[in-house]
Image (cartoon, rainbow, N blue to C red):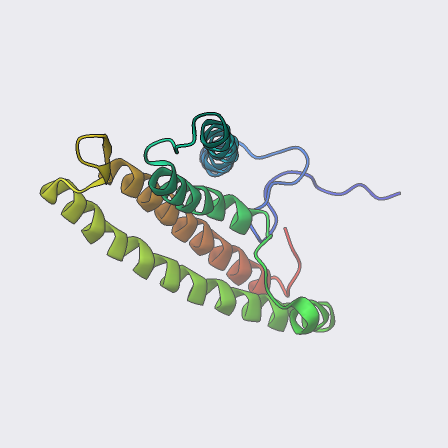
Length: 191
């Protein structure tokens, strides 16, 4: 049985068994760490919702800021987990055409996958860039969520987390573009 090289990431940037070293390992740890933080926030969101249901049933009133904090937490979860979803090639997309095309024409499939990732990089980059102005506005105007006199929170920390998630997802897509270009040069074979 032939052994397979298990060093380094494949064309999608996903590490194979044996892992990667240096900056790539640090990057992968950052990406997956943000995804893990998003998973922790899912647990936090569940606890907030359960506590609100309990308080409503016991005391007949809601906890303050559950809807606002829940909405921002949900958005943070999505953006924190986006880069790891991209890194592990788990984005929802139609693979009916692409998977067969990549098997039949590996080089063309790598180029087509690279074009998809390039468009995604551009779209995510635009969203990240537009988020910068939102963070600046929230910080300079002192924007907050909640009800004045009861409970409020500034919005800019939530927006910074969203910006970090979008920026990391953009860079991860760019890494996939580079991997696709390398695969196209090699004839579609993954590393």
